[in-house]
Figure (cartoon, rainbow, N blue to C red):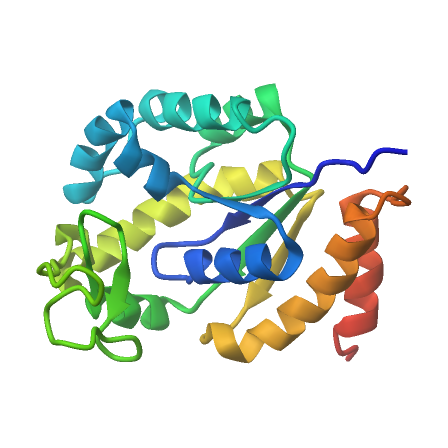
Length: 234
């Protein structure tokens, strides 16, 4: 029997470490990490979307949806892990129209931690590489490690804009989380490295069983079983 394709989504507010988590999952389990930010930088429609992001605004649903669905259509026969999409209920419904996710992972990070992370974040615009001046600084202050080009701080990462940005995310994400509640599992913490062992242990069982050709259970059923094994019971 052919193995079932796994389609997973990682949700989380700006600064929650979605990209880092997705890269680790992709490396550990052989999934393709699909980043909305990467597609926005590389496509013509994405150039328009970037103009919204640079002003700290949510990209209109019709713009981001067109970019993402086009890219996902090209990957119908691949396992993937989606990062940065969907962000709104409209986007989630559009995604369900072509491919319903098997599993949704939500990252919950305290507000003060997010505020500190975002305020210390600088980016390399051309590549999207992100640096944090507190715990992941560039080798040379103010320049990208690979190109030597200058880093910039996005307008919406500046301290005065961060609180409003996080409120926008929370308002937009609430109905998305409600839509996916049957297949959604949450992780809470302040540092990716500290929660990774727990996250990895659950995903090890989930993904290896699901991706095997003998898999007959749904991702949610597998996740539920491993959750009971790995989560400390009160």
